[in-house]
Length: 269
Ligand code: A2P
Image (cartoon, rainbow, N blue to C red; front, top):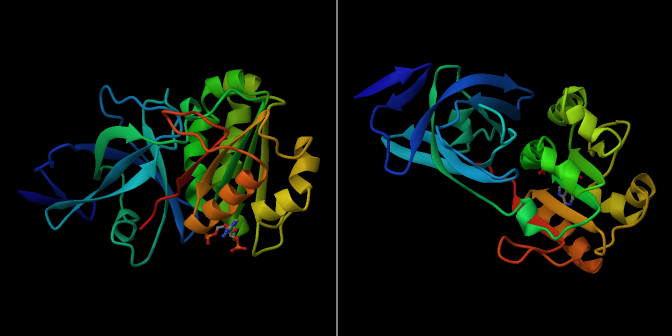
């Protein structure tokens, strides 16, 4: 029988292949962005950078979308970072979740923004726009990233300054963390940028690469010999940055054939 939990319809009928997770916290950043944490299913394992299908029961059917897992793989809870699309079938509803509500998850995480899809390298570039930072939130909290790479450069570009808050707090939390902070010191570099407001850094990531700003900030232009790149953002952003990687001679990697760069769409709707 259906019941109303915290303003959302929940059902005791869990569809095949899904489990329900209780929402533990919700944080709204702007009118377009929010994050939330949930319980972690027993035995649920994932690789940093992977995504899972999550959503809600709508009209007695599961309505799910792919969401990168933003929390580190050692954390007891799961965290997700989402856009709010006013007429988006899922996010227009998901944005109303409250503590104690239940969401659905298909506990089969997958994805290509993983270390397994990259060859060994020295510098790791994490290129993100908007909610595309979510998988990197997991990656930069994985101690393994500091063993595998000498430098990690997290680029996060948004239209407005307020949209950079999630990334600012994330990077601060890594540096302040008792254990991760020591690993990240001198290795993790954060380059936030706004494109439609005045800020300390402005402009798109492709412009930073083309005008030499990235090379100046990071100690040299992109090279497939020692650099590895993970890209997550809108389709347009992926097309642009994939093109730039290929122009620089980078080969795309996959789980079955590791390469020099990997891409994934930041999912929404
Ligand atoms: P801009 O403000 O110049 O459009 P969106 O919310 O549309 O996904 O955009 C998020 C960020 O990604 C914005 O800063 C936007 O810049 C930037 N962006 C949009 N398209 C591209 C692209 N093709 N390549 C690089 N950055 C992009």
